[in-house]
Image 1: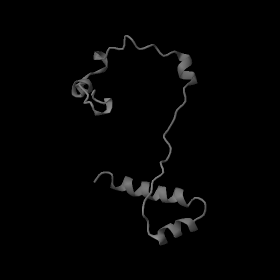
Image 2: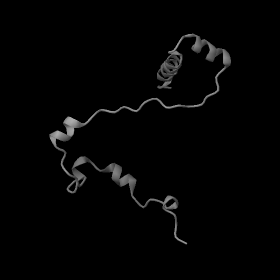
Image 3: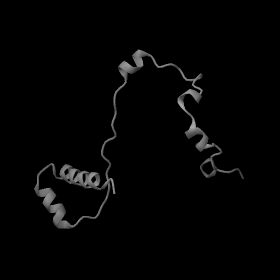
Length: 88
């Protein structure tokens, strides 16, 4: 029986690929991007993701009491905490 594609190991030398600089990458077969392409292009930023996390009931109640922005405020609090501890 043949090996499944998802079970096969990549034979690509990723360390060699990562070590390439821009001048060493062959882009001959890549089409040029026109000014029209960039005029129509839009900037897309990934949105928030939904997660399930256990939180003490009184914490959830406090954020819900803050109004419709309760979830956004909880997300902002988590962001502030993460940014404050990022360098650790």
